[in-house]
Amino acid sequence: MRYVYIRPFVDSAQRVLEKVLSERAVPGEIVLSSAPVTSRGVTSIVGVTGEGEGRVLFDMSAQTALAISSVMNGRAQSELDDLARDSIAELAGMMTGTAISALANDGHRLKVSPPTLVAGANVTISNLELETLIVPIETPLGEVVVNVAIATS
Image (cartoon, rainbow, N blue to C red; front, side):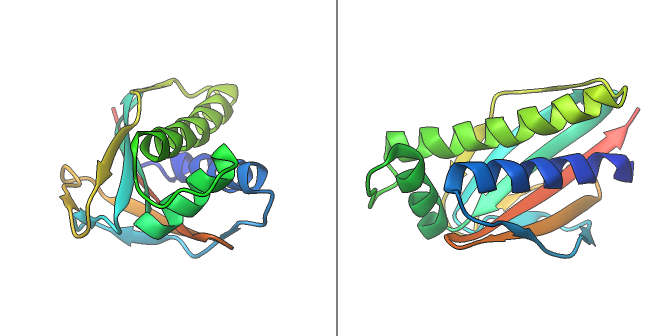
């Protein structure tokens, strides 16, 4: 994996979370993993193609997803209904789009798929035999974990 891809995804996730939540978001340490990802409860998966192939995951607990969705929609949400799921998928799209734009400005050509949302505790998501760089981002509403697994062609 080219490490050049991780920083734009972490930076964009941090900036988008801070803007959406009007709160500080603090990235943690980068960890390298080759193991499959086990969902914390709600995971947005975005496929990546182009000069790199792989996927980016934005993973959080159901409680964090509901809290973020509540802020995004200006009303309390107590269940992971269509609105909450759509809001978290939209958040993943915003974070990914910002990263892809930054990478494009640096001459990298990547395309992304629309986010797919997976909900459920202990769901295992295969890493497709790719090394995954994992960075937790702490917000006042809970942790959002960014998982980047992109192999270059």
